Length: 486
Ligand SMILES: C[S@@+](CC[C@H](N)C(=O)[O-])C[C@H]1O[C@@H](n2cnc3c(N)ncnc32)[C@H](O)[C@@H]1O
Ligand code: SF4
Image 1 (tube, rainbow, N blue to C red):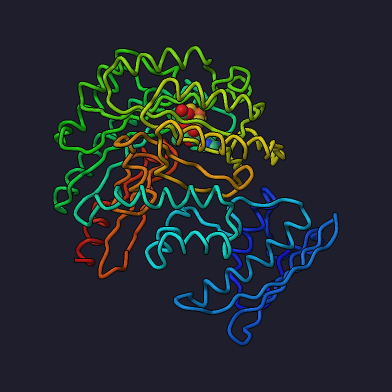
Image 2 (cartoon, rainbow, N blue to C red):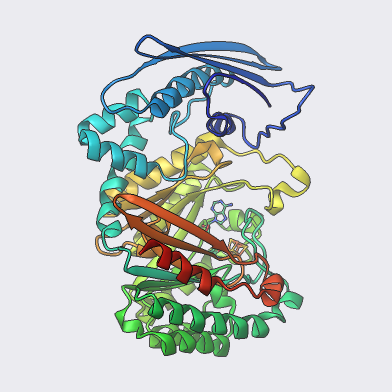
């Protein structure tokens, strides 16, 4: 798509909004023969900002205008964004016949926008603004304001003196065709696991030493992936013993092992995890429909999931999470509803409802292939999940959005009271420092001073093989960052 922008207009914002209407759209700078062209022009006028947008595609041409007035505490950027957003939205909506549940609101964390509005204007006014200025649907207003209120209590547990630790195990028993996470999934690459673990354990020890020297208290340890339970019993024992030698795990608020794939979970691995203090585990079906599981290359059945779930329940690990994905190939509104109902009947403390996000690195996009989805089914699926889960005593407390997600929908963590997954909220909200250990992990140093938050990210090499060659000294970088801030 070619963008012609005239005025003080945020290009990234316009691109993101266009991608919500046109999945996978690209915006090359010197596109000559573009078949889709969007022209946007803004003008500062008496008391506000006027915008006109014209969108031409092979299917026709639409034009829309808007005017947003300056008032109260609204910044110039906010007025400019809503003026541009409304004109672009109207033109694109007229041309495609689509309406977007999140209206003109883009960004990973809409609950931050809602929380700021609630703080500045009160909950009633915030809802009005989300409806009239940002064009959110009533359902998304309810969702985002609920999340803003529920996550607030969790965020308040984090301070400049606390942190969390993420440990990456980027290996999987096989590759699911929708997934774009970096992980090694072949027996040949598994031969790297012993060497990877040795290096990881060295980095874990160094990380805990850095945390200690910085005087930080660790609230959460999260072992994620990939699929950490791909480790065999003795490897898992070694890894968890290493963590247990660095910290008294009883003092952690949360110690998560992201099991994930049911086909990697055994009674013995769970016994080891529980003995080392793990108090939260994921066991993920994604769908409880065998034909969908087969289509997405998941390599386990519904029966395998149910057996793994029973084993996890019997293990005595306190908090169980199950991940689902709406919008998967072959799934319908009815079969997703059946998945949600079955999961609720198992009564896990946490249910995370993702919407399929189609990224280039996924098998389903191989060679840039287009990926058709049933947008209506995905939309009805996430609405059903919200309705049923909230009726059954779960509350949404964690929410994030990604580009190229089916129907521009979202990912939501639901939990029973007191069962919220803390690490995910801390991470998403930049609530405190997170040390990432292992390939593909990110260390995020966070420090707040007089209402301003300073953030520095340090990326580990993406692939296990590169990680083994790496000798970056992020401990020194962390120490320098906090020295500078204090
Ligand atoms: C880091 S993955 C690891 C989980 C574990 N390996 C598994 O597959 O069960 C965490 C979750 O992200 C979600 N996910 C992964 N790829 C996705 C995609 N393309 N779109 C939406 N959700 C996705 C899945 O629900 C998955 O359980
Ligand atoms: S969805 Fe999970 S198991 Fe499947 S490839 Fe991605 S990380 Fe691995």
